[in-house]
Length: 257
Length: 325
Ligand SMILES: Cc1cc2nc3c(=O)[nH]c(=O)nc-3n(C[C@H](O)[C@H](O)[C@H](O)COP(=O)(O)OP(=O)(O)OC[C@H]3O[C@@H](n4cnc5c(N)ncnc54)[C@H](O)[C@@H]3O)c2cc1C
Ligand SMILES: Cc1cc2nc3c(=O)[nH]c(=O)nc-3n(C[C@H](O)[C@H](O)[C@H](O)COP(=O)(O)OP(=O)(O)OC[C@H]3O[C@@H](n4cnc5c(N)ncnc54)[C@H](O)[C@@H]3O)c2cc1C
Image (tube, rainbow over all chains, first blue to last red; front, side, top):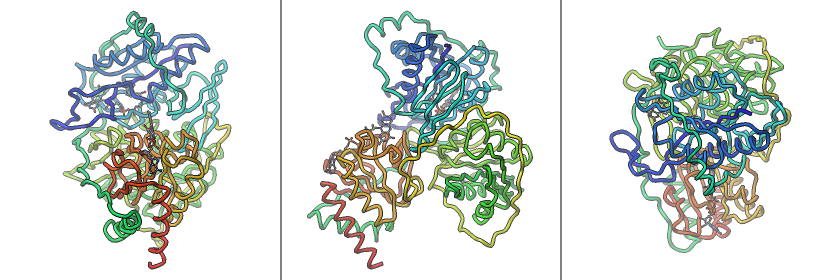
């Protein structure tokens, strides 16, 4: 089976976030594999181990994504591809990313593509379904279970807490939801092996894409932090008095009850 | 002037969801004086058209076909694309719900367009329609505009106020018949989880429990409090993983995103993935026995104490308040 995983390198949003020069400050920040993409990588490895084939992890980004790609290889992926957009485009959006990814994949003989259901930084959840549509293959989002039997596939997806069991077939794109699996940690031998696994680097030119074909359709005009909340009021005194005070504050000050 | 804007009305168990009325209001802003047209998709949905009109749509197009009885990306995208082909709108607004998240990127791909996802606000500013959306798990916000093509956005439930319902508004509800070709994904089974009572993502009050609730029975006092306040019960991942409640109650990045007027977090530590689902709530109350818990950083009001003592007392106090009202 020819399996691809779409992986985004993201800012670890558990970290403190600051803004400088109208942008999120990335200096010294921690970067990680988007957590939902870790589920996708893990699932890809399990599918390959059960069905044979090869897992290729694909990321669109800069040189810096090599680190996360190596981690994916150390987990057990076979190959990595970095589409390096550093020099080419400024201010891409989800249209851009999906265009680049689908251009790369369109002449590959894909059986299964796994992505995360959402990136914790950009947060749109667009890239997976956009890529599937561009490749004209079906997709199922926010999946918590994947069963493959020949070319037929049964998927369970999470729909606002309900679950749907869906039947479909390969080729297919799915996006991972938490609960799909427990991603493994890279083992030491895994890390050693990863150093020798292929990591290809491409540029837009190599994909026969002109800059204007990937130009963003939306534009960010401002990034800001939410107004600092005034320190909340932690009540004091006898518990019973606190409760009375709280109810009265919610009623007369906050006016929400 | 202005532009024509389509709004997809989302139907759940036979009724329109509130977010669809909010989408009509957002569409009015985006239309800048142009026409707002509701779109309903299903096997037999035209009866709901009037309600969209009473919330401010000028007219409604119902696309009916038995293959559209359940949502599938293939079915719904064919239906919506045929309306778009007929109507040639300049704008399209959909709720950022499970359905909206699944469908909208596919439509954007077919239109070769941009898509601004999960907007919490839309306004006209300096000659542009400016959308605000949370990024970095809700720790920051960005303002975005569409630079080319259709103005297409999904809106987060409970953030943009709907218009006052007015039954006197009138408009045409037409039906469009479409040919639905192959559906490549087929729903075999839907397992509905405990969603009795108020819809969590639309509730005005949410009482939420975390691992501090300690057991399934531990949720009882929270349910009582919620019912006194006419609200819904939610939970953290911690509580769901520990099997104290169903995953359908989970709030956060993986679960539901809620923006109630009042969010009461009981025995929840306040992990970033949880905050991503509730930090936009208007007023947040935290009840936690650990004064250092992160949840106090986002709370407007906090009580340091044992939830099993505090929550029943709160319920009693609110009952008294309701009697006086
Ligand atoms: C040429 C270019 C320039 C860009 N410039 C900017 C910029 O100036 N400012 C800015 O904020 N952003 C920039 N981006 C990033 C872009 O705006 C989005 O962040 C990106 O398209 C992903 O959107 P999202 O974060 O909403 O991801 P989502 O759609 O939420 O991601 C869902 C899933 O899609 C897959 N995916 C998403 N992104 C990638 C990726 N890059 N590679 C592989 N798989 C992926 C992952 O599986 C992920 O879990 C640029 C992107 C490109 C291609
Ligand atoms: C990819 C990913 C996605 C995730 N998505 C989500 C998500 O969508 N939603 C989510 O919630 N989490 C999510 N998580 C998990 C998240 O990181 C936390 O683990 C989780 O939110 C913790 O739940 P908790 O606050 O209930 O438990 P804990 O962190 O264990 O906190 C329990 C709290 O209860 C307090 N407490 C205990 N007893 C009492 C008492 N008697 N009275 C008062 N207070 C008491 C304690 O002081 C403590 O603060 C995600 C994690 C990952 C990695």
